[in-house]
Length: 420
Length: 123
Image 1 (cartoon, rainbow over the protein chains, first blue to last red):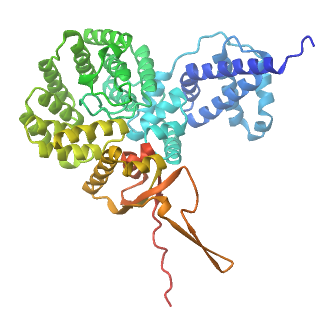
Image 2: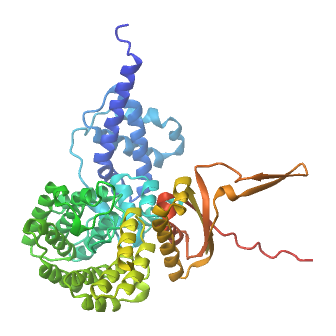
Image 3: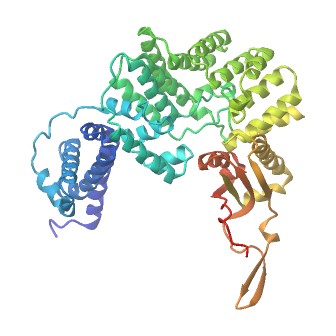
């Protein structure tokens, strides 16, 4: 029986090849797509070609072994697939043989593969692309996430998400959006779009409003990965550093957000020993690096706010005055609804309930009617002013707008305390 | 555009209605959710339903009436109630469905309400 592989050995080998393909996909997907699509801007065709290359890898690698440079193998295979697709459809039928024949040419296999992911990020967040599809586009092209998972995270039907992605890719090709990093004069504004698209994957402005930790964190890891890619490609951009720091601060607290019984724990009651020290240290370093570049921006300010929150358990007291200043600074940079509500939450926590109510009542009712953090903060501000009935009414609205069942249970408890 | 939100609950979730230890949180969550929809002015109609064991099912087969106690099918999740809402599109309907207590304790089917068929000749 020498030389005859047992079935279990076959399976083990197949499994290791499969994991090699999966590893290649995770590490290199965006890199390869960016290179393939940079030629003619056809993202859809590039994705098809790359997924065929991955399928070919699953077929070929088990018998011929995993190539020395898997990325180069995949790139060459996908490129040939693209060329074949362009030449004539008839080749498709014997595409696999064709690919295999061409694959034997070991040319260029050891050359480093250039990283064009930065250009691809700017393409995905281009002003010509509808804002709500920029983040999904980035998640799909850079990370290779499937449309169904993206759709679920954004609460969109999978069919609709698929159609929107297809349309956006068609637009990139048809409009001839260039695969390049914008010129210096356009860079700040375009970078802001890229940063916002990454942050949108992370989930909205949460935790900034204490007690309203009600957001979808299912893509937090992906968002942090995207920010890491951006920071590695633009190490001198303080706002990219700020964004990564911000997300690391928030992510570091995730284990403390839920108690042993699964109940929601608001920031002020969290067990700080459960915070991930390594992430906080990294975030602090990033923030220091950013500040040395001397260009303040929204994400650095928001990261600084988080930094003050994580220092509270160390110093034993929250530096509310500093929090207030940073929130005021944030409002001058970016007067969003979330920023106003966060500011009001800080005022309320500083026993300035009346001022908090003034800030909240200055907001447009139609902007806040379904914005849960507004109602949570309004309830807290009313309570700080001794207006328990109004507080209970606001809390009722907050509960009705809450998606996370554990946060809902927590707020129901808060409301009962108000009524009793 | 009108959608029906079809709320499905597990038996365990539905039985929270009747247990004094859990009824407060159960109804509190639902009434807050319904209140938020009313504040947004999107509710056309909606009701909770009595439990499946109160159902009666009728069929006519080969001209014979068959009346049975209980719901048509036994499933893990049971129809607990429904809402008809008026919102701009499916995205908005999904957004509201996610805020419902049934989203985490069961499931919600979201279906467009069929518009009346075009011009039926009356004579």
